[in-house]
Structures are given as C-alpha cells and as structure tokens.
Amino acid sequence: MDSSKSTVRAYLVPSWLPEKRMFDHYENANNTSFTYLWRDDNDEKMEPIQLSAKDYISKSMDWIRSLLDDEKYFPTSTEVAFPKKFEKTVKAIFKKIFRVYAHIFYDHFKTVQALGIEAHINSSFKHFLLFAFEFGLIPKNELEPLNEHIVNRLGSNYTKFLNIGQEKVKKKK
Ligand SMILES: [Zn+2]
Image 1: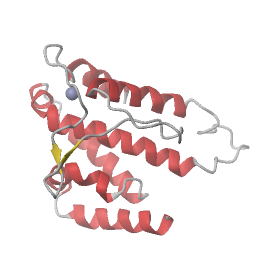
Image 2: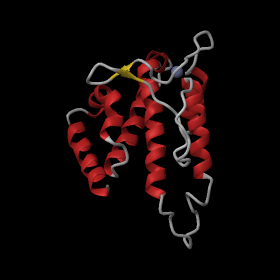
Image 3: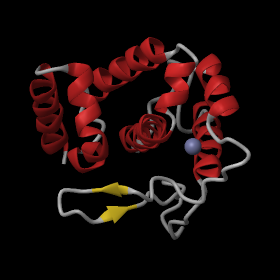
Image 4: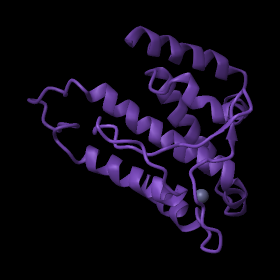
C-alpha cells in the first residue's frame, strides 16, 4: 500500500493542471455526469463537501490510516470485541479506496502505463475487487463508473463475482 501510495502521490496531479473536482466527468446510464463528494462517514452530521481530487485522495488516505490506528475501530487485542459499526467502517473505507482506483483509471491511466506499473495496478485492483465482492463491501451503484474497466480486468467472471457480492450486500441489509 505504501509504495503504491507514494507512486500515486508523485504522479497523480501534475502541478500545471490542478484538478478541481473528483470525477466531475463521469456519466451514468442516464447520461448525467456526477462527482464524488467527500465526507467523514463517522460524522453523521457532516455535510458532504466538494474537494479537488488531490485533496480527496489525501484526506481519504489520512482518514483510513487514522481509523486503522484507532483501537476503537480496529481493536488489536483478542480480548476486545469488534465494535458494532465495524462492517459499516470497513465498507466506508472500501468505498473511498474504490474511488481512488476510479480516479487512477479515468484520469491517470496513461501515466500508469508510462511508468510501467499497469500490471501492478491491475493486479492490486483485482485483489481489492475480489475481496470486496466476497464480503459484499461495495454496492453496485458505486461500481458503476468503472463497470467497463472491471469487466476488462475480471473478464466474464465479473458478472458472477458481482452477483455473489450483491447478494451478500442485500442479505446484510
Ligand atoms: Zn488526479
């Protein structure tokens, strides 16, 4: 994670082209474009805010790290029970990481190819997805912007994996 994070950080935002928003050009099935807004998922009172892609990613990475380091969310002792909100927290983390992948695939894939790390990114994305599908961690509507990329990477198995994952999302509701 750390090495890919620094690679991403170094190349994500060329200084001559500040990215104002996170994914403002994505279009859904109804041809309406949408953007991702940032919020602290543990702060239910917080209004989602619009951030630049760079700020969105760096805030998300810091947010995820602070949760992982927090015994309240991720207890390290076997004596301590997992918190009630554990699954909700993990889902929020997966949603944010997925959006970072989405940003890389949409806006920086040429850079990824130029750096020769395409296979690395693809493989880490694939592992990430399979884990997410296995435990139903990402809802279908979140996956939509990357549908095509996901199909390209997981092939025809994608639908199978996706359905298994979505069944689990439904059951847990
Ligand atoms: Zn970017």
